[in-house]
Length: 384
Image (cartoon, rainbow, N blue to C red; front, side, top):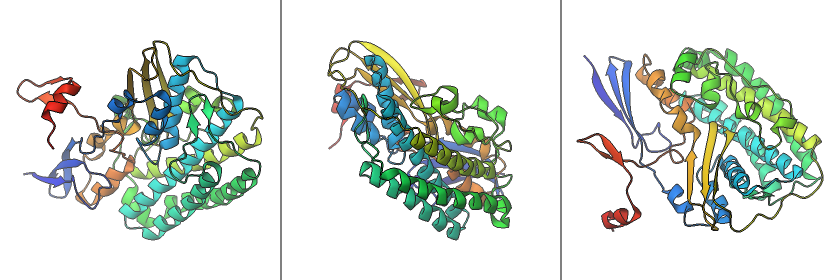
């Protein structure tokens, strides 16, 4: 006999509202039904009413943690349809900011994961070190979270010479601490008992559901956009794609901490090879009809932007596919066989961001068909 246990949309284990209906037999999870759509914000539609430049700041707010990679990918798409080649110095600055973002995002996730298994001391250590990275971002861009650095045609802010020694000093200390965290996570009995063999995603399952990012790489999928489809300055730099094979929560921890070390090395190389010259070029106000797809490796995985221009100063269409969208279905495979006590850490393991994932689709439940709704229909249905 099984029972249904609802979790969410409001629950202490959830950082954002989503709804799960777990089918439980005793303490074992048999299946899970996932319902999303609680935090849809209509950003894609709002982009159609704003200029290409204004949309840089709107795309930045799709995800506060991953704001640099969102603006980078959006700008790449617009630059592709406008035929813009950004300066070399801008490419390297973008790379440095992207990797600083990856570091602080992974440390944030590692702290949350430690908190979910009750290891709050480790949570505090992770977030302490994350603060140092945010200090660097604040010095370079003026903002700790939203950097407002990328723009169509390059970057708005330069990295000054006096920033580089401080940046490298912080990263040197952070590398030492991260290697210590890797040793702790590989040997501590609390972490091993709560994470090893828990929430397993096989390589075959990862490929079948199109998992991306650390979630896929923890299952042995050797794919990283930075290496396999280089953008910014990644094609000029040397780094290793971190792969694990077991596909459990422990593997996801080891992949992300390993990527922190690789990101530190990327920043070092980019800072050492930082070319001189301008940091941006002036983009056209209006862009001829065209379309382009751009993608980047966000901290959570592959991020795609599809932009269509129509000859005006505003895009005809902007479509965003975030990494969490590609990873949500992994929960269906990872939860089966877990216990009730393991639900929080398995939920957190893919580093979900629901606010940047949610979309609304209207479905006729009787016929099972979905349809597109016009803006006028939405206005008629709107309740004040």
